[in-house]
Length: 269
Ligand SMILES: NC(=O)c1ccc[n+]([C@@H]2O[C@H](COP(=O)([O-])OP(=O)(O)OC[C@H]3O[C@@H](n4cnc5c(N)ncnc54)[C@H](OP(=O)(O)O)[C@@H]3O)[C@@H](O)[C@H]2O)c1
Image (tube, rainbow, N blue to C red; front, side):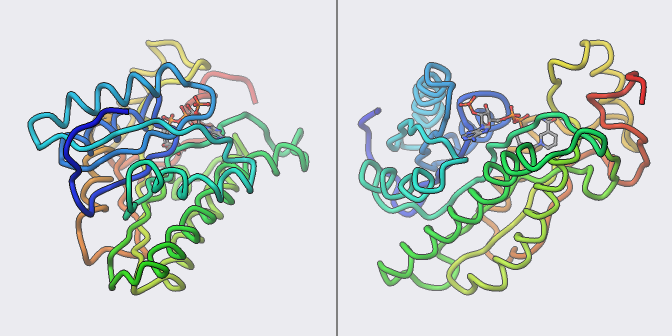
């Protein structure tokens, strides 16, 4: 953990922040004066690097403390213990960015309860439990209206559906519904906002050329960059009138129709 002055009232837990989009979100928030709790499951070395890089990014905005926290979000008890552990180390938390996500392929032909449950635990259950625990802790310390905020990472494919990654897509569709329901249930203390990226980072299923081509497939000629998504997350965290809504940050990909998931383009049906 780095030990520098604390930025009061601006401590955020970013899940899955060791790598990829979560790391960019964590660095962007640290540069904007947030203290960042960097959550990880398996990527410990990467999470510690994100912590060090958050400290460097925060230097110009007054420092703050940043630290890494391990948790398997598929484990309900461990997920319930995560925010108390963060608060014990960094002080009161006011925001959670639910970025971590399981993304395993299945479809209508090979769907089963095991894949469904894995995706729902990590992608739906954990974000709801973290919102619930944040609300409980804000209530316990007598916090006022709009003192907390939860940002849920969704996906443009909810508005532009295809049946690839069936369990993943269902888990994100449920999270999108929870985004509305939690905004209703947890107001006025807590705001709940969705951010839905388009294709932003490649996967092991795509060649560099296929990723670049898919990234261009949008009305604006390019989908989202990690920096676009991080900027939208920061806007959602800081804009006091947003709740129960989703920012689609995707170059307009949700306005189009794709028969396959980007990761499966070029794959026989
Ligand atoms: N990448 C894109 O182009 C894209 C497009 C649309 C939407 N999104 C959404 O944006 C978010 C970030 O995308 P991404 O591609 O950066 O995500 P990712 O690489 O697929 O996953 C992010 C992290 O989630 C963590 N994770 C997965 N299951 C977990 C569990 N059970 N417990 C704890 N951590 C778990 C992993 O952490 P460890 O490595 O520490 O295990 C992983 O590094 C996701 O919510 C995704 O659905 C991304």
